[in-house]
Length: 194
Image (cartoon, rainbow, N blue to C red; front, top):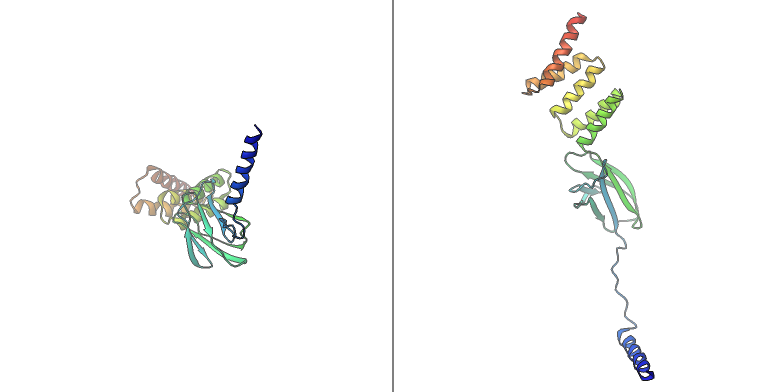
């Protein structure tokens, strides 16, 4: 047994001496100088395919998980711009610090409409109209957004504005019965007031 422990001790000593290489620097994988960022929507889902601009220069597109990397930039403030079709463009100033992770939230048309409907349910007409106008900037002329805008006007007794939107929807070929029904309701109301 004593011989076995001595042999084992010698083997370990030799192994350590052979495996150690002094004087050579250890090469490490390092992310020093890189800053990581993640983009989410207002439902906390990652947003892939976002074009990323740093100080007006395109540097990346977000991956399927909404992530991208900022490679070695000068310390200090930088301007970032995030763009994707169907989402509001986001522009922010941030401080470059590789020890931090950046998180961004972008909102899309559907999420703006949900906010508009919630505001409408709470009789917050100015907020509802604001969300609708933001959605129309992303997708101008979209019939469901325009119809929702006509409802906001109708509920505020802005009948002329509501009727104008509805008439334009009908002229552009929209045959949804709810459009003609609301327009008829507005016309009946205007007739009763005359």
